[in-house]
Image (cartoon, rainbow, N blue to C red):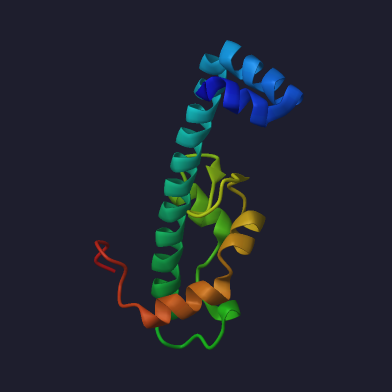
Length: 129
């Protein structure tokens, strides 16, 4: 009864898609789970890069920098090389992944925002900086 009602609601195209999904569900679900794992690892990678960037900004600030251009020793490329263990990053609330490049990180985490957070925050938790 329920199956007939769902088939009726789906229409002719929906029934074809459902039949294809039922026939290939193992492959489809495997791809979805693998992408989910990739997404979680990319989110953790972005978090590690962000923590390292905050440490670098805090170390370079020393209370003298007035804007983001004057943070000593800050380079996205160096931060990626030091803290990135995976070639992708993803925001915590996004389903999209991006390559770990300096241009991408500049868009995801503007240096001005990092500077503001570094000024508000005492040393990064667990780092001893």
